[in-house]
Length: 127
Image 1 (cartoon, rainbow, N blue to C red):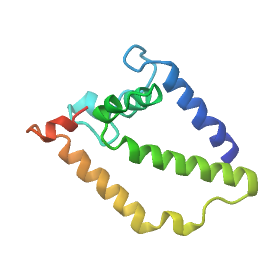
Image 2 (image 1 turned 90 degrees about the horizontal axis):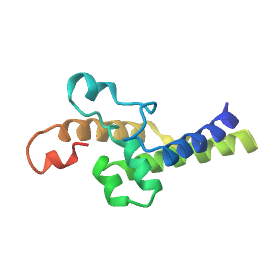
Image 3 (image 1 turned 90 degrees about the vertical axis):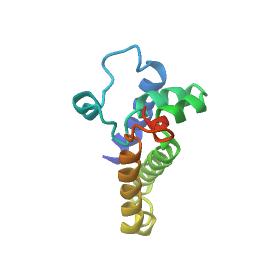
Image 4 (image 1 turned 60 degrees about the vertical axis):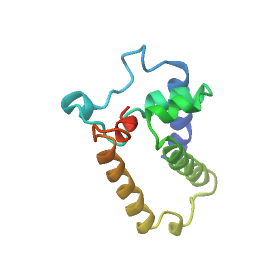
């Protein structure tokens, strides 16, 4: 499974790099924003990563201000999968402690609420 992930993440990144999410219809669209008009904490990540892969950091941050955090998390999991595929074990368990996970999910919850407040400066966070 880890070897599959080692190939799946770069393949997905290559697809996002090559295809502009604003021009193709096969890349996923957030069902929450489509159904309710509210943006989830991950809304704008596909467009943001496309912009980031093409060197447009400001546009990537405009789509989703947490894109550096998501990039770090994806990089962490990618390296961990490479370690599992190569040596049979990933990072030590303390690298992703319950406190860190709760902090991450708490940040996502706060960001998800704040980015939907229709008052400046919070409205800037809406994708």
